[in-house]
Length: 314
Ligand SMILES: [Mg+2]
Image (cartoon, rainbow, N blue to C red):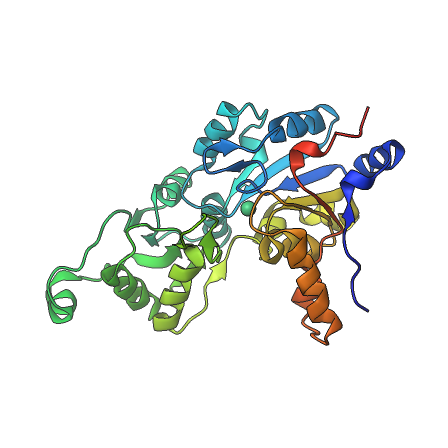
């Protein structure tokens, strides 16, 4: 059966909005495109989040961004007056470190990524190399024969966002991954960053490049994959998944992640996807596309901006 268009929260009466807000206890919210865009807060999103916290809701900021540590993200949120602490901040760099810890990993990590990842590995006591520029210098022959000396200590490759991504990095990562026992972790697979007039490649483009030449698939930490829930919320979700609300601006990461876990889902239109994209997906389903991931991208609710959530609430 084709899914229905999501309900616009702004059409709720006072009693409906009150009843709806009472229906969830745990909020997982995406950051970029929901709370802020780069370094600019999205209007009133802090007021809404702080009010939900005051009401006793548990709020977790979950971001696919791997370039910052949790500390740095809390710092950023605090400068925008969000009352969030470390316990409410979950990033993919942190998840990658937790994942390796869960696997009892104790070797060294080759990172294609930034200091967001290396600092999180420092915090769990794992050695690493790879952060920073690694430019092509000479020929492929000299790279292979003279410059690259594989480190036998490397037992895992983590791939995240890397502005210094290069041919040597791709070659080194894939060479380490040629050993089937090397763990292959990707922070996320977002295709691009939202930016008007330009296409800024996201981590997904880098992950695909390495997966292609390594001829292997990475274990992906970020939404829509489920490591976050497996590591932190497994028991609570089993008890009552509808007490969870997932808020996001992307259908194929945030909403898909929420629906796969049977959470309530809210699309905000301040980031990547708007309601017309939901309509496109519903049309595709009506035209016979039976891909389950597609049906799971249709949110339950939407609102033009998170800052408007309490507009009709006393
Ligand atoms: Mg987002």
